[in-house]
Amino acid sequence: MKKLILLFSIATLIASCSKYGSVALKYPTHPAAQLPENIKSIAVVNRSQSEKTGGNSMAEAIVSGEIAGSDKRASNQCLIAVYDGLNGWRETNIVLLEKRKLVGTGTRETPELLDWDMVKHICDSVKSDALLVLETFDSNSDLLASAVNTAFNTVVTGGPVVPNVSQVQMNVISYWRLYDPVNKKVIDQYRSSNQLFFDGGPLGVAVPSPDALAKTAYSAGDEYIQRFLPQYDNVQRDLYKKGKGREKQQFKTAFRKAEVANWDGAIEAWTKLLNSTKNNKNAGRACLNIAVAHEVLGNTKEAMVWAKKAYEDYGNKLAKHYMGLLNIRLETETNIRN
Image (tube, rainbow, N blue to C red; front, side):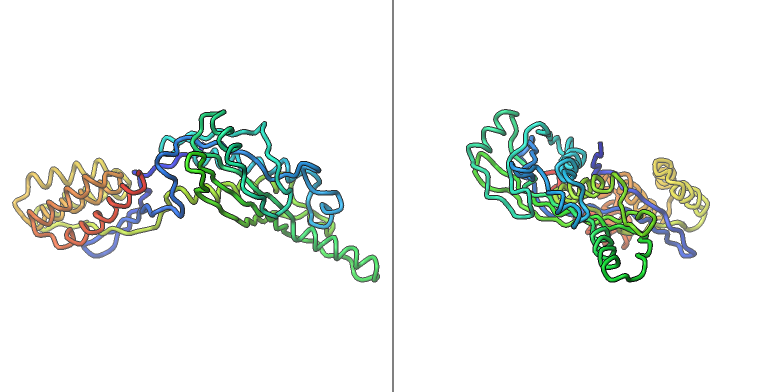
């Protein structure tokens, strides 16, 4: 099960010939959609198949590159992706109603909203706060359809042999709604189109691997649920790798610890230097470096304490700008948690 960790950043230290080094790390950004704080348990159900067929006809399957009934089986992978992506995040509980199927259109046509009494009944039955419904699910394999049509034209016209197809593009179109039974409103609705590429088969026939549709369906479910999760941008932080006077060697030693991701050891070395130095510039640089190290470790509040100390106590100019960046990060992290 995939877990989302907000506080820890993946960091890469980049050294240069100047007095500065820099560390690249991941910076959290706001999610595309907001999950209300009161929603702690979500029931997830599949409504993408029709009552009559439960899938596509064989004729449609040949034209589109689908396997009869495959959509019915693969669509459940969307639900599994939702579970893997969201269950446990912010103490959210996902309840998969795999044995319960709601009747939909069985096509890409979006069905009418569910009756609110039904939504409430389903949520009450599993003690959930909301109901997430996979309203539609449809798939096809473009290159297989192209290969079938080309092969047919070749037979009719006596044209050249169909060449081998190296890749197959599997397509999945899905539509989701998130229902709030208490307020009787749709919290979120979203249509996605997902494509994955797979190696084709021999003899000029583009046949995807048996698990191609399931993987694409899982990708569709993962794309949807990522809308509610924080995303990350790459950012760069500057820190000092050199000091002045007799503390030069201590700076180098601490920086080498940071280079091998021993950030706790680097903090210890910079703190020891800070406690022994009489040089204000070195003290300010050490404080700034300690601040960066804490941000890398996910301790944003502690990073702010040290950046503030670097500027207020020792006049480090780099720390003043850094405090502004940390303020923005603190606000972002607070909003994400709430």
